Image (cartoon, rainbow, N blue to C red; front, top):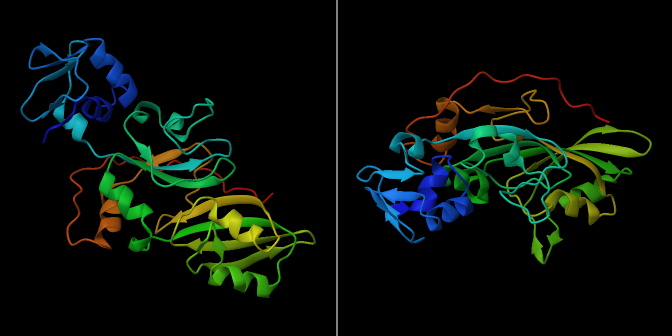
Length: 263
């Protein structure tokens, strides 16, 4: 299948799409021995020989599907780029930095599990509310909301003129000044949990995602990651399609670490 050269280069992990465009314009990319300088040029790695700075791009590497589970630390932006030069989640995935994108978002001050991949169908499966993939969060809020207030936001509240879908909210722990809740969502709107609790006058003090579907809090320390194995990826697809499009997936040993402190 033909694809734009900058996408092929990025998928192979050679450079970001923006950098790939610079390489093309600089005459560092060739297709079947002919230097290409047009950004709209397409190629098919099954038929064409694409080289960057004289090195041939492997069709197998460019088409490899990657699925990463990362424990995002506080202070990292869920994005592939940032004009303000803040730290990005893709900075934590090493050699795969230019080959994957985050699935959904966790805001700058939220920690916890996030998936990164180069598989667009998998991204849609996890991120779109219609596929009913639950995301579970542990939420520390200021003060102690009443049961009436919790019932109100669990049924759905209007945020940015759109009502939120019903959420499951379970009290985990209370102190004199704070309360911890487990919140389960099937949608992922911008800062949704923070806005839900703001609407009842109890701001969020700490927020972390502890589960995505069947992937639970896996004792990954902040900044640690592991690859999903083939069985796990197929399990996600099995819930919505008869046959998984997965061809291959890297499997590695799960990195272990201590559970978060509830401080």
